Image 1 (cartoon, helix red, strand yellow):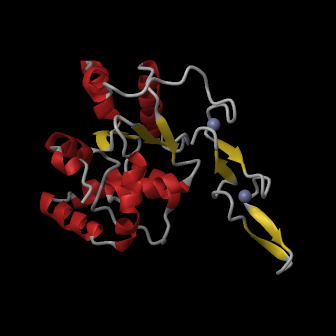
Image 2: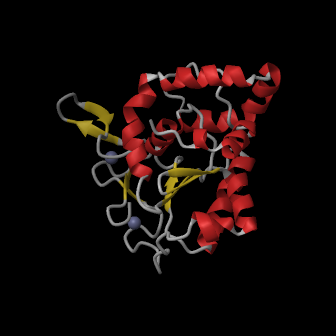
Length: 233
Ligand SMILES: [Zn+2]
Ligand SMILES: [Zn+2]
């Protein structure tokens, strides 16, 4: 069973203290809460946490409930494979400014990693909800905090942990040791955005169907009418 932070008592404690990380927060009433729900949760979580003041036991119970949930189990192996790889650096983040603390944490971690000139597989959950599904499967949490950094398939931590590791020099010396260097220039195909507008629907995510005489969802792109850049993603 892939279980990143369970093995790291310090990291686990840090993450469970994070206002945006709450295993015991009430589930969304919607089947697919989406990115909006993750971002809303950032603001709502402190209030919820204060109201319920969940105990460690409560968290353990909620966590095991999540583990037994099929929707997490299904994508777990695929998600683990997507971050696996010797010294591979993967960052899940959002480029949306909806929640200031989240946005600034994401920006800070991206800036730190750029400064260290390592190749980072940046996965913007606001550009593609599939990244959010991956992260849910990896963390087994419905509303994972952002950003989260993985190196070599293992969770390094959130913005505060990355900052602390950077300040102590450990990030460069130990965590990122052996990571591939950043490419000298941005991808010529997408300019570094890692996405391109869908050619099949022109980026509208809708296509006219001759069969039904109406519009249907485009199967070739994501919810934003984007496809991942073939050259760099
Ligand atoms: Zn590209
Ligand atoms: Zn499309």
